Length: 308
Image 1 (cartoon, helix red, strand yellow):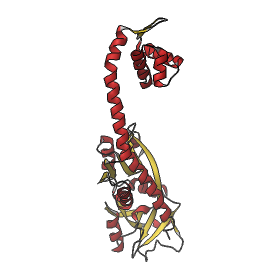
Image 2 (cartoon, rainbow, N blue to C red; image 1 turned 30 degrees about the horizontal axis):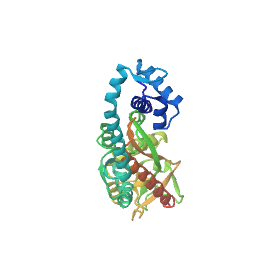
Image 3 (cartoon, rainbow, N blue to C red; image 1 turned 90 degrees about the horizontal axis):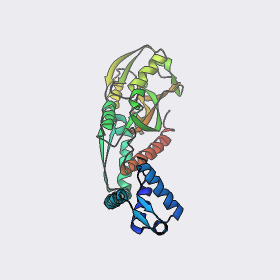
């Protein structure tokens, strides 16, 4: 039924005042507006709620039954809405967020620190998981929202999301590597025939890397697949190969003993905040959502001058 809370309040005012004009004065509406709201409610319910004469307004049997039961329900709803508003205003409570490893390491610490400084009453539980598990925890309702690399189209059907930053992929190689050139950016062709150390298939980025290598027709060998960027960096230092890594995996302090180059044409990934479709985050979770967005913008502004 298309019954509004406004119609309910108007009905209760008329039931108590037994007069349309007095009911309007009580709730701040004109007499025609009160009459119209009552008519709309009666039309929606398919039954008369008042018998009207020139001298009085009398509840019908159906109207009397409704007037008896509604006040308790309205009071409960008012109390719940007031409690919700106070809860959102004090920003006290727990928020659960799931995040994939690179984002947990490079983005989330700044966000958690800012939130702790601004809102000490908030308790944030961060679940550091591979992307597939992050998406599963969002869809199951285990967490309020997730921080992920853009999912494939099939997964996005069940999610609502917002892109918070665009992250470029980079080549990481030893200084003496033959793939390095003097140019600021490396062409994809420089990777032809190279041994690559890549993130494994559990990473949200691996799908994008594989698609780009296929698209550019780059012949290569994957010599190692790892779950964490730090493992890949150590393997590159040990001389096992070269890597294509998300830009956010590179510490802002740099990678001693390794060189970092952007690719040309560029390959980027979208970093997104996602929640279950048609299930907007609660006010407290939405507040954290906005903090993460703001931190992401600041981080990328600093990193724009980071690359060689």
